[in-house]
Image (tube, rainbow, N blue to C red; front, side, top):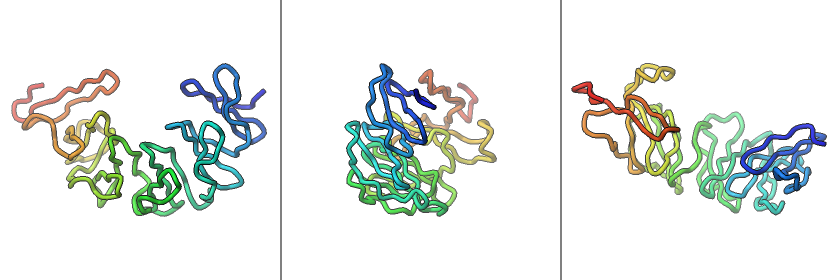
Length: 212
């Protein structure tokens, strides 16, 4: 019946004749195929493109933010912790964050690589250093780290790196674990040797003794 179906968790995105909707795994239609494009369901909200403008709908197919972001001028992202990133197309530092009413709560001054909010913080890049902003758009803590392989905080912790010679080789950076205050939580003189997020454990190494 549909030209394309992509499923995630217990829902499926449906496409037919250039229109998109959502259905359940059991074949029940949740969102009618009235939209030019739909994002994935996140926090019970879906970014929706209609007549060339982006807005957001809920699972009742109601607009919670009317379509007002012209798709030729703006790129919009999913909600995370009740904030969604909205970027000005082709502007290097043109990303900000809207609230549930569609108001630009955090101004569009951050780069395209800025992340979603997790544990109240979102990663961004400032002058070749990573930084984390809070929901007021303020820098949460000073940072001398210049890379983060994970980016988002999870359970109050994320991995960050500094003194990197190149970013495509795990072994040429010093890797640390920090909390949401920016504090390194590893023992003194220790760095992350290897991280295994799926298995939920991390190998650390003492720089002075070499012990793991």
